[in-house]
Image 1 (cartoon, rainbow over the protein chains, first blue to last red):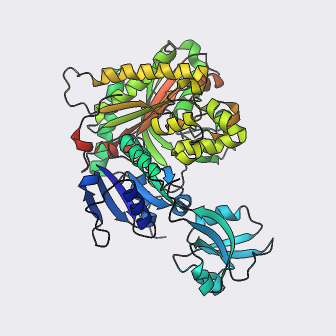
Image 2: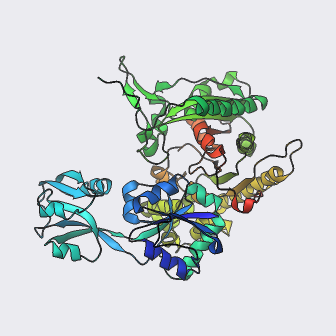
Image 3: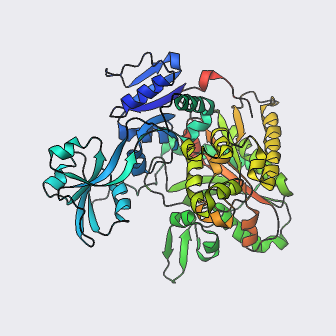
Length: 208
Length: 345
C-alpha cells in the first residue's frame, strides 16, 4: 500500500480536489478530525497528515512514498525528490515586500526578514545589496512595518494582508505551486502505482 | 570548557546493538567477497589532493575535506575508494596478474549540506574488478553487487541500471549546450511538464528507457539493447530457485536511464556530472526495503584508470553503504505490497 504525506495547510484542499478529480474516492479520509494516519482501503492508500514543512522529511526518509508540498518548501529545503507534476490550483508567488514602494537603492546594506533564509541568500546573490538575512517563523509582514528589516521575502496569495498593513509587493521572485513529490527509492518500489496516479491527474487536467 | 557528548553534523557514534549489527553486516559482506576470490586492500584515509584534481567534477570537489598539513602539502580526506585504489594500482599494473579482484572497507568523508539522511561519514564495503574482458566486467560487478545484497538482507532489493552518456545525444539535440542543464535536472526529477515536448525523454522519465532505442542515437541504442539483454538474462538467473536456499529476498532489476541522467560523457555536458563523475559505462544503484536512499552503487570506469596512467583495461566496481544497508535491512511494519514476491525484470 502506498503511503502519501499530505500537508495540513493551504495545499491540502488543492491536493484532495485533484485526487478526487483523478478518480480517487478518498472514502475514509477524516479531514476535519484529529486522526493523523488513515487507511483508504478503496484507493489502496495510506494518508499521513503532517505539517507542510515536514512532508519533505517524511518522503526523503522513505517513511512516506509520496507527498504534496509547495515549491517554496522544496526550494528552501533543497530536497532531492522527484517532482513529476505540479498542481494547477493553489498557486501563489514569492515576493519581496516593503513599505517604501521601491526596492532599496543599489549598494545599500539592508536587513531582509523571511521564513526562507536559504532561498533569500540565493535571491540576494543576484541583487545589488549587501544584506543580513533574519529568519522569522511567522508574521513576516511586521518586520518591514516596524523597521526590523527594510524588506521581507514571503509568499503572497491575494495581497490582502499587504494592503491591510500598508505594504507593497516590490518584486515577484518566483511563482509557487503545490507539487506532487516522490522519494527516489519509493519511486522504484511503487513505479506503476505512482505513474498511474500521475497519468490520472494529467487526464483530469489538474496538473501541469 | 564543559565537555559534552555532541558530535559534528553528519557523523555518529555507534554503540552496542547497532555496532554489533554493523560489524555483523560488514563481516557477512567481507566473507562473501573473500569466498568469491576478492583480496583485501587497506587504503589510507588521507591522500595528496593533486592526483585527483584532473578528475574532480564541481560537485565532487565541493564534497572534499581539504587541508594543508604542516609540511605545506595540500591533502584531502578519503571521499571515495575507487579513484584512490585506481591511482595506486595503475602504475603497478605491469607487475600484477590480471584479472584482479579487490575489496576494501572503511569510512569515506564527504561534506554534504545538513539534510535528511545525508551523512558526512559513511562506512563502505566495496569491490573492484580489473582486467576482465569488456562487458563481462560490468556483468560480474553487477551480479556480485546483487549477490552481496541478497546475502545480507531479507528485504526486497531493487536495482536500477543505466548507461553513462546514454542520454547525451537526446539532451544536446533538444536542449543545446545551454539548455541541457535544465533538461538533465527535469529528467532526474522526472518532471513531465518540461520533457513532454520530447517523446523519447518522456518515455525515459516514465518507463526508464525510450520505446524506440534508436532515439538515443545508433551507438547508444545498440548499447541499450545489449544491456537490456544482459539484465534480462541476469534477472532470469536471479528468479530461478536457488539450490539449498529458500529465503532469498525478492530482487527487481530494471533499466532506468532517468535515474542516471547526470552521468554525462559528452564534453559539453561534463559540468553537469554528479559526484561520481568517473563512470563511463554501465552504472547501477540499489534500494533495499523502505530505506529512503540508495544503499549502494557501482559501474564501469575504464577511462579513470587510463587517466591515472593505467593500461587500457576494463575496470568496474561497486560499493555498499553498511549503515544505510543496516537501516534498509531491518524489516519494517510495512510489508511489500500484497506480500507478493517481485519477479526479476
